[in-house]
Structures are given as structure tokens and as C-alpha cells.
Image (cartoon, rainbow, N blue to C red; front, side, top):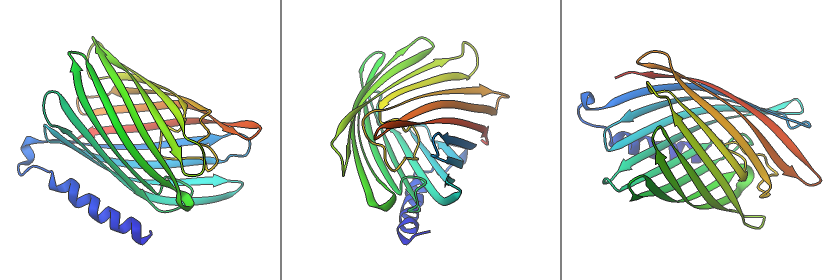
Length: 265
């Protein structure tokens, strides 16, 4: 692991732990273990990853810490990387909330090397919120990309629908706009739900990234199902398709994920 990675991890974990309550009984905790497999067409190889996410809900503040390992294989050769992410959600009032996110990984062509994001959400009507966000990421070999976004979410009985417009600005290409639609439908009973994401412009809905995309002509679809098994156990399954533009052709990928969430409070 690089010195930069170790330094960032050292800064991230104390910040997350500092928000923990003095009384554990006042919190809700859970652990999510998940694996994901992404296979690319036309000799694009594969990406395999595994993540262990710890979540602590303190009421107005929720903290997530997620160590992740991955392997990217192309033409019989492979690269491995370890990364760790942290997310802090804060509800500042009934009308405003924030999400602060950081991810740091080894500088290999597997994940983004550095990835930082900040969102601010405001409630503008009884069932509508507006979110503005900024994100900066550095990928393998120092390639930097900046994301600026604005979007809205409309809640309805049994779910919600959201749209986000993002200006994607790679350091070596012209900026372009990406579009993301998310539909969430909750089960009539219990805590199960089904989610659908549709995107164009920047198709990666995860931290991995092909070295030659960010063309503005990518597209993707991802479907995820959260199925409660018991009061404390839930199975999370996902499947998706992505299409990346390349000079003269396209490369496609299929994604499958499986996770198990356990409440430990």
C-alpha cells in the first residue's frame, strides 16, 4: 500500500470514529458483506471485488466504513488493489442534510486512487428534495476527473423517483453532461425494496473505471433487490449492463453482485 493511502486512511478512520456516541445503546449497527463481478466484452477482461461495510446509525448522524479489495484481469494478467471508503450522513434539520464521502485505494488500474464527494440536500416541498453535489476523483496514473451535479427526488406512497444532471470534466477531454435516473419501490409489507438506476454520459455506477472511457456516450442499467430474510438478516442482489464508447466501436459489460446485511445491535 502506498504512503498516500496509509495517510488518508489514518485521517479518515479517526474522523468517523469521533462521531460515535458515548452510549452504544443509543445506536443501531449493521455489517454488510458483498461481492461483485463485472465481465467486459471484446477482450476487456474482468473485475472482481469484495467489500465489508460497517454502518452505525446515531440518529441524526450515520457513519459507514467500507474496506474493499479488487482484482482487474486483462489478457491473462492481473492487478490487485485494496481500498477503504468512509461516508458520513448528517441530518442538520428537518429541511437540510449532507453526505460527505471519501475513498482511497492503491494506485493500480482497479479502483479510483482517490475519490472525494460532498452533497447538500434541501427539502423544498412536502415530498420533494433538491441535491447539489461536487466530486473529484483521481484514477490510475494520475488521471483526474471533476463532477458537479444538481438533482431532485420526488417521494410518493411506496417509493421515490430521482433525477441527477452531472457535468463531467476529465482533465484530458472536453466536459460533457451525464444523466442518472433512480426509481425506488418499497414492499407493501416489511423492509424489502427494489431499485433501478438508468444512466447515460458516464456509465460507471461503481468505483471502477475503464482507462479509455469518459467519452460522454456511455450508458448503463442496474437493478438491485433488497430481500429481508429475518428481522436482522437481508439479502441484497444486483445485476446490470453497461456500454462504453471506444473509437470506432463499443465495449459492453455485465455486472452481478450479492451481499448479506446483518444487524448487530
